Length: 259
Image (cartoon, rainbow, N blue to C red; front, side, top):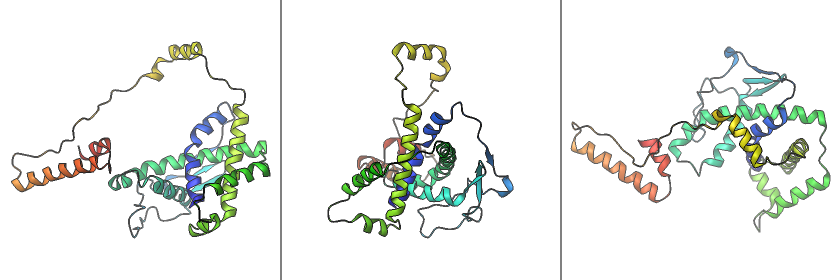
């Protein structure tokens, strides 16, 4: 689990990193797999249902979703990272919204894996080397964060991850950091005058679309509804209010789900 969570977190920062690295680089080959060979990304099973009900359109972990520079990204790779990412947000998002998030997160992780393939290709050319000292320092920091009385190796084993896998994951992240730092070395912050010049030259990029802020949660009922139906909807509102007060859901999430 340590390794999967680290991998999920690592992938979330890759789009920005890839944008920094590949601006101005030679065009990379990213090929969508023909539709007949793809799985339906909109049909993702609920990772938190017990037991998981297989979806016939998405059960094959070996199904190739996209091909980057001749390297395949499979549905299994995406779902592995997705499961770890969903577990990270499970305690922060109301259960009823988790399933709604899956299709969007599936696409995002797919894009992150594409970025990682491109980043790995660029790093292979530059041959980034992580020193033993840097790796040892990073591992020492991880061990220092293990709660007293617990053993890192035992915790990893319980989650199905080995120390070697964790070490390799940390080494990969250190190499990426070194690579990105080498690409951004010497870049200074824009001055106020430069920022204003860019703003004045690109006004459309700073326009915000109109938005609506909800201040009430409304549940509609018809005059023809029975007293029992009206009472049920009133009870629903009271339950939502109680959840907001208890902070088990935010007002914004409640409004988006129920209004």
